[in-house]
Structures are given as structure tokens and as C-alpha cells.
Image 1 (cartoon, helix red, strand yellow):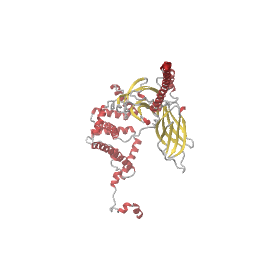
Image 2 (spheres, helix red, strand yellow):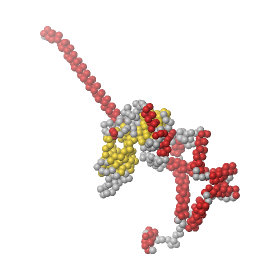
Image 3 (spheres, helix red, strand yellow):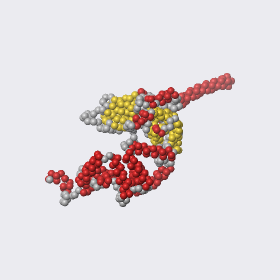
Length: 586
């Protein structure tokens, strides 16, 4: 059997070798197919990961900032009455926003929506409670980017218009009109811009005062707002009601925005507000720092770092000495700026309502107290001239008074104000203090403010209440004095004290005759002679003001109420509870 099977045994290794080769080829094909599938899987997963990353990072094309100002000519309710709980609902893509209800047709409400390239239609609808009255669609693709547009949009299906301030900014595309890397300055455009505001064209368009260019390079030392020790910062620039913003730089404390923005300057006295925020989920933001730059203090074409401040703009913001790098250039017409300065100032539509805060209340009271103390100090200075406390100073003041009364006229008043300005200017030139903020409290050193905060926290509730009580008492007494003075003036004319009213009549008749026959300059000269000579001729007399002395004799409403006599018999409880019965019986 072995002999018969030997040839088969000889062919067995060949067959086994072919089988192994076949298995190897099949395994290689499977491996190659598996590698292809694996590569496709990895590519598909990378695309998914990239897409997920885009969604997670909110890679939108732009940010649409909408300011809902007001509406007009809105429809009436079914019963003919005015709508009392109207609100607007906005929708852009999958994002929605609902405004607050208002019965005044004025909202002044600002919000942001993210714009994607595939959806450029902004839908808005007018609702009153749960009833839809009208809607409208705004095509955002027709609006220029990085510019604030004021539009009136008519509603469909009902009468009425809505006023919106709309800005499309924060563009994430690399090559945009606001991308600083792709920006190349055109000398021809720069020359045309300068020609627009030259002196020969100063009266062409008075509302176009100037042009502001802001280059935002980046920031450093920002505070960490996220758990991982990083932030997602973006920068917002505001000039009046115009609002632009950069894109968001994710997971960094040293963002590089590299954006350039332009603003139309309507008032050269405006200030540029620059705020850095951290972007969180659900479109919430967290404050990182702020900076306010008056346009008149801009040094054009200078690239420099600016320190970011806190919300109150008093001390340095949190972080490692946070700064932002900017380059500002402003071109403006002096004649147009002068004409604009004499017109009503543009109202800023969005302003934060100041809530009651104890520290803010105390600070405002101290500010008012300082002004009042300065006025009282000036009054004491004038009184010291009348009292001859310094003979040399009183002599000079007396000579000036006589010269002013004899040779002065109405133009003397602005001349005196010019002399005061000249004095301040000379002091600035001599001392070398050209900074407008010189002489005020320097908030750059925030260590003292931190110490004050710590001391404030250590204060007991009793001490805080006592401080509030002292300030409140001062405010109460000051308001009471002013109210009493005003009521005494009114009571002088309504015969609350007839004798004093008739005395006022006699004095006013005498004043009419004197002012008719005697020039005003001689009256002022006589009044000055009486004031300067009183201390010399009657050294023991008390300084006084005749007008205030007269008004102090006229009782105010509180004193008149105190002077009123009560009836001899007290009224019964029933009469007190129902005084109408007493009137009917009488």
C-alpha cells in the first residue's frame, strides 16, 4: 500500500504548497481590502472629527449684531385698542431670539446671531402675547460687511415698520475686507480720503466729520476664563451706535486677530470703546477687559500696546497685565467738527442701566461734595477780599473792581472767562502737564484699590450702615435746604405772609426806578464800595447776603403747616374715618 500511495505522497507537498500560496494570496487581498477600508474609515472619521470640531468651535462665517430700536404704525387689537404686550421674534438658521414685551413700541434691545454661508435670510415676526400679527424677511447678503446699517423694515400681512441697527462683522474667512494680513494700503485711496476732509471741502457734508481706521493686532496677558486655563477671546469695537467685532480665537490667552476696521466719525468728541470678551456656550460672554480712547487723544499711525481696564475703567483688568495692540488713524475736518459740536449730541441707544450700589452712591456724593467745597472755597476767597484779610490782595481786587465797573461792558464777561482759561493754560505750560487727566486721581496703581476692597470687606455691617447714614443725612439736609429755599421764594409771591409780600412789592418798585434812572455799572460800583468799605467803616458787622436774609424770613410749606392752628374740639373717630359726612352736615 505504501508503494501504491507513494506517488500521491510525492504530489502532496506540491498541493499543500499551492494551497498555502492560494491562502496567502487570499490573505493579502483581504489585508489590502482591509487597509483600504481602514483608510476610508480613518478619512471618514477625520472628516467627522473636523466637522465636529467646526460645530464645537462654532465656525460661522460672521456675527450679526441686531439692535431692535423701535416700531411705528403698528396694528391695533381687535377691539380697536393699542397693543400692550408686543414683542418680536427673530430667527437666523437654527438660532432664535425673542425680545421683551413692550407697550411703548420702543425696545432698545441688542443681541447677536451667528451667520452661516448657506442661510442668509433673517426672519422676524411681530407677536402680541400668543397672536402673530406680521412678519418680514431680510436678505443679509445685500448688506456690506463691517458696517453698521440703520434700516426701517415694513411688515407683511399687517401695517407697521420696525427700526433696526444691523451689523455683520466678526468674519472668520481669511481674505475679507477686514483681514489685516491681506490688506495693502493704496496711496491713491489715502489721498482721496485726505482730500475729502480738506479745508476747501469743509462745507460740503457737515455730518461727515471724519474717518477712523482701527487696526487690531492682538492681545496678551488675558485672564483665563475656561477650566483648562485658556480663553476664547474676541474683541468688540464701538463708536457711538456703530458696533464691529473680530473673530473668536479659541483656546488662547494671546490671541492674534489681525483685523482692520473703519468708522465714519460723526462727532470728533466721541470715544472709541474697545472691549474683550470670552465666548462661552449658548452665546454667553464673559468680560475680560475694556479700553476707552477719546478720538481727540489719538496719535494717528502709532502702533502701540494699551492696558486693558476693568468694567468700571478704574483699575487694571484681571490677568497677567492684560494689553491689546492697536494702531489708530483718524482724519477729520476741523470746520465740520466745530459745526457738529454746536448741535445736539447723538444719543447712544444701548446703555447699561446703573443699579443702586453703595460704593457708587458714596462716590457720587463725594464728587458733588468736592464741587460744592470748591464753590464755597471761591466764595470764601471773595469774602476774604471784602474782609481785608490780605491788604495787598484786597487792594488789587478793589482796583480791578472799580476799573471793571467804570470801563467794563457785556464783552467783559467772556473776557473774564478767557482770562481764567489763559491762567489754566499758563499753569499747564509752566508745570509741563500736557496730559488732560493730570491733577486727577491716577488709577494705574491698582494695589491701593485692592487694599481698599480688602478693608471694605473687613468692615462690619454696623460701620457700613453708619457710613451710609452719615452720607444720607448730608444729602437729606442739602435737599431739605434747597426745597425750603424754593418754597420760601414761591410763598413770597402767594401772600403766605402778606407783610413780607408787600415789602417785596415795595423793594421791586424801588428796583425798577433805580434800574431805569441809574446805569448798571454805577450800581455795581456802589455795591462794591459798600462791600469793600464795610470792614473798614464797621468792623464789627456780620457778613450777610440781603436776598438770602429776606428769604429766610419767609416760611416754607413745612413751617406754614406747623403754624396752622387746630380746632378747640378734637374730631370724633367717625368723623376722622369719613370726613365727607362732616362736609355734608356743614
